[in-house]
Length: 109
Image (cartoon, rainbow, N blue to C red; front, side, top):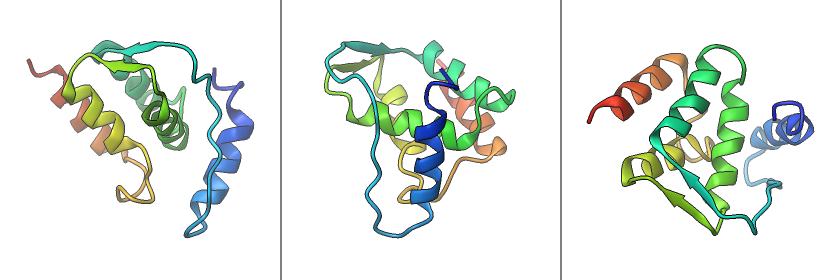
């Protein structure tokens, strides 16, 4: 997946540096998607282990916020996706410490 979104993420990162820019997000919007806690933890853990970077994670979460047929397992998963998405509004890309804190909060039942 990382190689498939590489060009989009590069453009996303550059546009995030410009205030008021419009950013194109590319995703298949006609498919139904279900995001559970484990799936979100997998994305975050891939960022923590270096398979993804925090910009790629933000891009993926931005795309998820726009999918019409997306069902979240619970409100916590939805809140975290929206917290990671749109770093320009939400205080920047999440640091390693912030991501570790998020994973802990997702694992609390």
